[in-house]
Length: 148
Image (tube, rainbow, N blue to C red):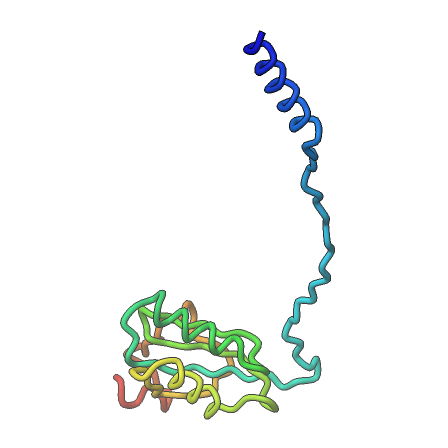
């Protein structure tokens, strides 16, 4: 009889504990967050210039060239920037009112201690595919005078 009382006591106690237990499901709330993506807006009346220059000191395409490319592209007034690791060539389109070639050179130098800029020039159009143009043997232009 004592065993039955103990078993009934345990059963009653477990039912009481189980029934008092709060079954709470976690409440899920969806919060809408307004994100505003700030896109670089260039002045539609801006005078866009193009600059090409060589970058010395790069050792890899991803760590060096892409880092420099991203830093140049993030500059205010820069429309586009491309850095070609193979040819050590950077091509940048920028707003002349906001960016100077000196600013571009400073940005490259700040990207890493080993980077240096040389051969900075503004151009009408970029060399095709970043490849350096070669003069033909019968070229009479002043730029080719010392190369032929």
